[in-house]
Amino acid sequence: MITARRALAAGLVVLGALGLSACTTGQTEPEESLDGTTQAEVSASGSAPIVFAFVCSTDAGEATETFTTYAAAWEAERADCTAKPITGSGMSAQQQAAVRATDDHVDLRELAATCAERGVAPWDTAVTTDEQAHLAAGLLEYCPGHPEHDHLRRALATYRG
Image (cartoon, helix red, strand yellow):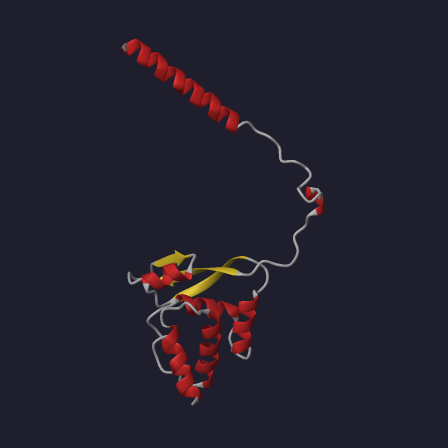
């Protein structure tokens, strides 16, 4: 009885292995797509938006931590970040709108770095100067999901009276 079970189990293992090897046999991609164009006829157009990584100071001396999403930086509540472009070659419509909102007083890299920060100015303070107002206007466009977005919106509205 045990021998029959072993033989059956071994047979199932062999069948499973054969099935898996059939799934993984290498086949080249067809040269023609469903719409009749060949791969050589397809080309990329436009540019990809700039994507940043955020290098932020930690509470431990000169140590830094790198984040690839704003949400991760916000969760860590970092207060001193720089933005390093990691991919992309042109600004997205949102990025362009954010820079325009600053009246071109603040560049995209500064907006990106400040967007990664939490618990520091301008996110938790009053807007008291034109320079701060330019930055705040850009951040409101660029960082709609920031945890302190509502505070900054109210601070800018108060400044503008």
